[in-house]
Length: 276
Picture 1 (spheres, rainbow, N blue to C red):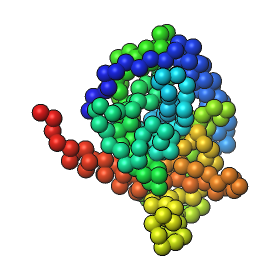
Picture 2: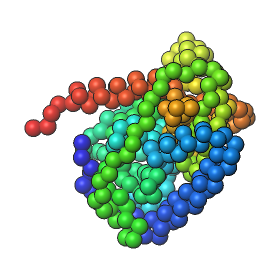
Picture 3: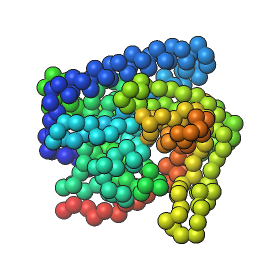
């Protein structure tokens, strides 16, 4: 799959605003890491190892230049990013697979301080709440607001399925709006299987279709789509949501569910007919 050729452009003032936010977030994150290192010692080294693989995701209205929504994501291969479906649901349908003439593009802020173009290539349904983005070879030029070709690949994170109650974890994300980039720590409080969320016999009563991890590591709106990592820097879950009335109850989609989702993407992609 190749990057869409349509040249999208943002007003220079909007690009500069996004870059100023990026610089402020980076400064806040560095301060937070400094404090985190004082509290947790070597665990901060794990976070610094993971951060180059974590991105912010900005869903834009390309006609007006306004931001529709934002969240986080992380690389699972050198050019594929995982995020939550609810981050990009305003521009992509459920159970969507990449089509050349219908591709939707978003902005991603990478750890190297660039605004890159990415394409929505695969989504699940609202219950799965996962989506895949394909990074393109284009950045948004801070001097002009236009796309500039600049190919680059990023380090993917490794998944781990070995997780149990009591394990220490960290939620990493590059949150939106008034939230600075955040790193929060906690433990796995519970592991919830899909059937635990079925409150009725009808399909419409099923609340979740995937295995989730409950943690007391804070997950705020901007953390959505970012990785929940273990002490080895491996992804055990995809940060998804926190309960508004319970600060210590936060949920992440288990990495085993993400692995199934990635397998579904590979099967769909391999099943597509070759272009002649």
